[in-house]
Image (cartoon, rainbow, N blue to C red; front, side, top):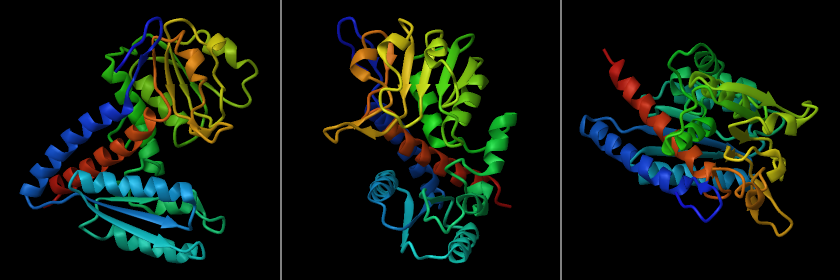
Length: 291
């Protein structure tokens, strides 16, 4: 966490990730000493360059923490039936505790069917309807990794959400909706804004916490932020020079906010770290459910 004169604390996702991963490694060693190695299977269909980078980072994260990881790559011509059969086999494989199918999948494959085919006990992405239902009703389940990482970042600056007004920009099943529910669980008052919200600025100016998750550059600028607000940037975009940037005008907003996440080096590393946490928890739960 660093700060410069008259500007926000930068919440360093890389440093926080390293701290959490060292805790994960220690728990993995303890499990391995009892004869269980947490296992993650990652399936990639097609050859999207962005997906290949994500998958490589996920597998590397597993290896660094002492997990057993399996990467299965298939041509884009793989049929839906073949993919579902592969998921079913992994559901029954006791060495695999987490299954992740990298999205998006090719158009001829129904992503919803794929997500629902994964056993809820192995749904370490937290996308299954059973996981979503558990989050909605406050039952234990797997939390989607990106919003889970955002919550850990707020925790890292000891931010108390009780009674605060949080605005989430974006309503996806992967980030926006679960983010809103997690903030609600911590007693924040939550507003969800999206493409049909007529006056975004009206809501963001009232917010103590803003999470931007729409995949659109500069959706949040300094004039839209209340002084002292905390801003989490989930966006992954490229600017004219091809550099990675988020949804937030970082240089402008950091002059107004009290804390902000950078892109890159903010929420991104946390997403993979929380995937490791979920996989570890899946292994620990599997151990506890053994007869």
